[in-house]
Amino acid sequence: MVSPDSQRLQLLSPFAPWDGRNITGAKLLIKAFGKCTTDHISMAGPWLRYRGHLDNISNNCLIGAVNAYTKETNAVTSQLTGEVNEVPTIARSYKSAGVPTIVVGDHNYGEGSSREHAAMEPRHLGVCAVIVKSFARIHETNLKKQGMLGLTFANESDYDLIQVDDTFHFTDLENFAPGKQLVLQVIHTNGTEDSIALNHTYNTQQIDWFRAGSALNLINTQKQA
Image (cartoon, rainbow, N blue to C red):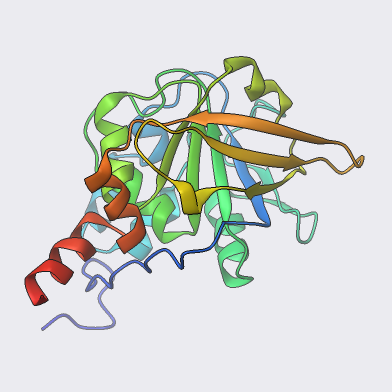
């Protein structure tokens, strides 16, 4: 038995499976500048006391990432209210409003330890996709296991196109397949649009993880079959 009042232990609930539709109306949670290791994404130290409580440890999500627009850490702008607040706080407000979010990153995103919480926390807080110039391999795999989209810019310079107040639409998720690029439609507030090609390394099984909501969801479904 785990007490519902426990601050250090929490029973995990399955992540929601993909609903079969394109992800639309997404907002930018943070565009990370420069090095963004798993420790920037999910800090260790005192936070490790909460590693058995996903909701509590998620309060450290991306608090070490450098905001590309301000060069500050743990301060991002909500496109719902205009407020500037801590990254987990803004993420939770988007999630409560039913607005999916994306994270944009630089080179070798997620380098460092193979910290699984660095993938679980964004997933828990409503991040649907992490789009970067390049990934550290283990972190990329961890994102896949949690049912997230871990994607890379086909043209690295497209990183510079992403503005803080953009809106994002995935246009062809129903055609998600190994070796096939995905397309992200980026709507800027000045009325202009960009169409960005995104690469991925998903194989058929990993795409099934995405559709099921996570690798664990798929395993459980297969066991019940």
